Length: 226
Image (cartoon, rainbow, N blue to C red; front, side, top):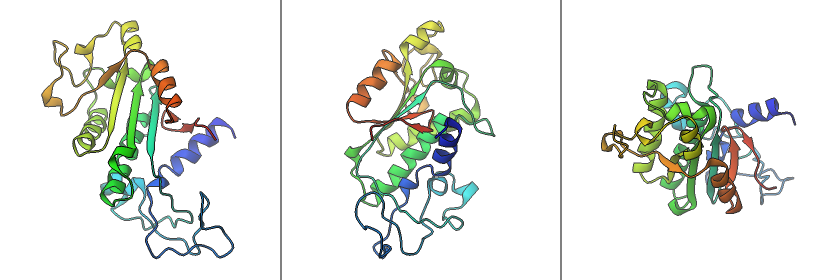
């Protein structure tokens, strides 16, 4: 599967793991109703991440895409590797947007009692050219995404962003240059949250993968174990 197709596939299905089958779901008679391939006898208009995260744009309810395979996860341990400044057609950081979407879905699942809060851990690791999204002055559209992530953290979803210290050092930056820190490099309480700094992005990602985290490249490509 080529990289372009993987990107389109992941974005098009982005977090249909956020849809939840209701108690009245009926699975197809000829398909197994256990395991990862639970196919509905009749598709349903289940909620999607786009509806949950951007209700003003997509509406609060899914009325357009009928879902054949509902998805529920018991654990959401995820790394988003944001080492490029990839943006969507409107200039929004793809990585920040997808971290926000994943965390929004998990907030909904927690509220419904479908996943335990302690089983959610979503980490966005920012380095390379993607670091510019965290460096002051942050553009208003990226700031909205970051503040949305901070808000979900305050609401009890275990999600946060990390900047790579090595990338910062290479760009001659310190904490005072990062959003969520003041001119002295101290956490700014007015920011509503905090961007953490790790010792190095690659080692951090390796550590997390070794501890069972699923890896997403720029919010698109899955590199987890089969």
